[in-house]
Image (tube, rainbow, N blue to C red; front, side, top):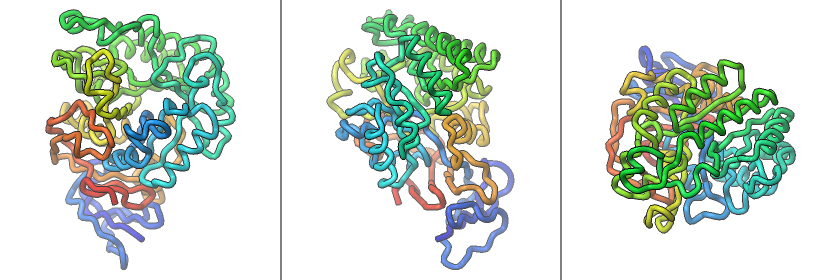
Length: 428
């Protein structure tokens, strides 16, 4: 079956054109007549972008299907404009071997709404004591090419060095959750004026920055690819700039919530604002936005972290850290980066699609909008707005920090290899 998207603006630029999708590919661009039997979509000047790629998603399956499943998480991703997601390894059992990563990969294929790529754990059980079966996971049918203990830092420098060295032979990326654990014992909020005023134990920026600096040095010596998860501080931006200027193969992501939200929200003591790393200051958020626009931070990743109500609607100290992100990411990027003039829509394609696909080595995602390329696409109405309601999102959980916010940018159509997966807020 073919699909004709009429009157779309490629990358939100220029005059509207028609885009014909057939056999999973972009087959024609211009003034195109609809072939017999083709489904016609009236784009009315909306922006057509390559489908988004999320390098950092928690799908919770196996083990915590009360919070999310691969099916519900995939639905949230497709509705958010994503065509590929990377499922983190902190499941139960941990994705530290070929059996678990193959299960995640197969469940993603069965669901079929997005390409689900399992991330393999760096260490056995995320315990930080012994390297996991990196080679076995890489050679499995899942073809794992990203490893991370996300949720835990690989704090042992020798283990991290060995992981980086092994990853070079596997052509893989090691993604680090940068948090020196000895500096965050009992920490509950960004160390600063807000935490002091509210009585929270402080979480210093140096806990992140020191690990990023160490790992950049290790990666440089190993000739390895390092990816820094959820950058949250201005100091980390300085470290990344220094490392990239030295020729280190380091990439970095920032979450939507660290672009928009600050630690001032903690005054309500609402655990929906609890996240790891914590929300930082307005000054940090401004530096993160500027670094993303410049390319020092490469991409946006959601760190989509669903939790059931009993794990979030409780006292702050015992509440689980994490926020939903898949269905709101595009809107937050629109609010913080497009409406401020920091990015145009081609820039949005860079940070949500092209760079993450390049970092992960995905040959068929984040591709240019030209004929012959895979039709992994998202249609966005830049002028539309919507009000976020957690209970209306596709995830099993509802822990969104944007509850009740009116945000710009609405995904109206998502196609995975030419097949419509989501349309007008509904799964196809």
